[in-house]
Image (cartoon, rainbow, N blue to C red; front, side):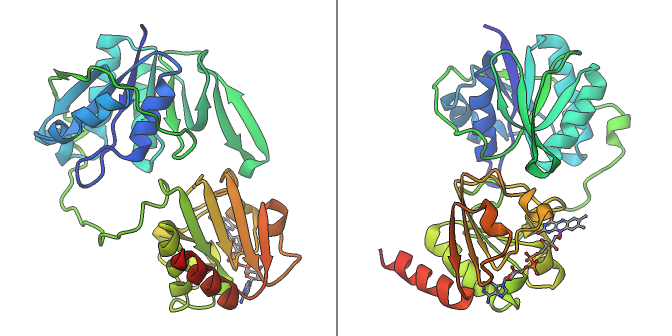
Length: 318
Ligand code: FAD
């Protein structure tokens, strides 16, 4: 069966991110997935079984301090080396900012076409992308080299498909060119009990209507009751209500959860660009004419300060 390379992205605890399991699942449409684990020595030990459970027939292990000590360049080099050796039919990479940078570099190195932020990959290699802030659905196919796809989080449901997960070491040799940007420090973000925004099945986002940083506690309360992540509109971020890393939209993160709850958000096109592929959208807004209601599956017209705490209380009581 044709081999498909899947780059494994790991979380800080060394487990595969949900986006990695989704990428393994999507890759199965094209052939037999092999996972590629890149990192410092010892990285693969905690994740090999998990990758096998989600369909990795082979787990290529490229472990070296060099992979960890420099930014993305060594990872793109190792992947390019594997593409040359294994001649896979495609490469699938989670669509994180690092994943997209690796995909771009890999495309240059291998002389291949690449498609970013795809939401679906068909068995014939045709990929689906959402473009122009969701106004257009694009179906494209790579016609040059080894097709490289970055897969948008939450667009595919990760499904187990146990495979051998045979470990295969890969020799890592990093060029001088790839050593140009060294990591000098890593700052671990304060650990949150909430799921990662781009991976969460439920996202509760607050907008300018939330009115203050303190009042974002109302949004966090609902998110916590639902086990979801917190997002914010750009107006909320620019007003200093919530940090930029949580911004959803054209210049923020793209999310595609099962449930997106927009609270005090008007529904500007730039916000929609980051959330409109969510499966179910609920809006809470005091203005019945707010454009977000055009997009919402369910809407509540009312003051968020009354509606959201009441909903949180009901959910928490269940
Ligand atoms: P507003 O548009 O001010 O809406 C606030 C809403 O809250 C209103 O609908 C109001 O009725 C409601 N409200 C107020 N009080 C209450 C209450 N008590 N209870 C219930 N409802 C209430 N925006 C993004 O979000 N993400 C992006 O990535 C992004 N990128 C951009 C890129 C560019 C190049 C540009 C030009 C703009 C971008 N924007 C982005 C900004 C976007 O155009 C909007 O300005 C922004 O999304 C508005 O945020 P908002 O809906 O929170 O605020």
